[in-house]
Length: 371
Image 1 (cartoon, rainbow, N blue to C red):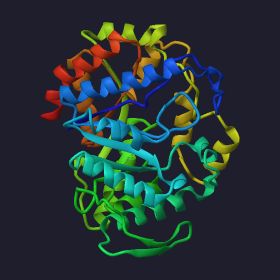
Image 2: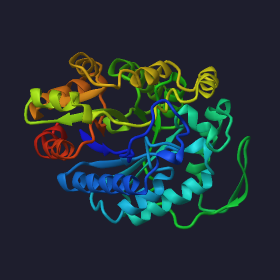
Image 3: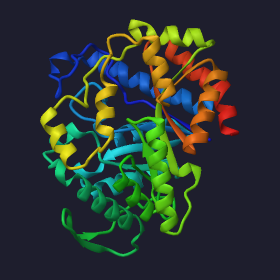
Image 4: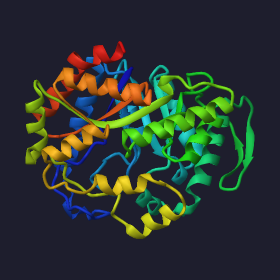
């Protein structure tokens, strides 16, 4: 079983809640530079400690993430992370030029010696206004873009593309991906439609902004659809994202999480633009997980024992001593069958965060990899 460290490159400065786009009056060059430097250092640590992957993602116009182009950060990390796979989970494919996405992934794959994981995601609902894309076109754009990118990576001769959303006279990319036929592809699969599409196209599935019971149902649907399509997914075909914080004891982990300094400051991207959210919901974008997105943003003033235990019980958080965290991982493996856990840093305050990554890497990860 594999572990990936996910860092959204969260802005370290103070910013307002429930606002998007966030005014740049709150922006500080010093805080932004510190945020990026901290993320790169944590990724370096994860690589040295034996994490299998590190993960970067795309978000816009706010302090939740300082990576509007995750391929830029992945390029920098190719010179820092020497062993682990670099997973881009991922570019927001429907709002981008798919040929450019294919070219950037191919270049990164060559630079890293074939260590790129290609997550093709649809992004958060509010971000469809970033580049003025109609959210009702999200699924159609995504599916066409994914089919085009796959052909760009594998077609040996120049070809044209005349689709509903994308038209190109002639395509022949240089360089080519080092991994053949192409880097492993994942997509978000909480909705039945996404799970069925992934299964038909033999694409890996990722679960985020959800809980273990719902992800398990979605994974079962994915496996059934894959069997109908004539193949059987392996554990590594399923990624599950959740928070983590490890301490020497269970009590210490709880105290760390309840400390006011542990609360991440920043915008609430899921409720930031209710009009866009409603349009996206009507288009069947998130399905049942839209309510989960809303719930994740509430009660942020200070974590309580009840809130923390509730998130552990729903499979949204790994926390406690190394032994406790390993048992929580076993439960997720038994229920969901995921081969990769994409671990988000549950708190960001200095020594406790660094110690958590170290404890996971030295006390949990070797036993997790042996499962």
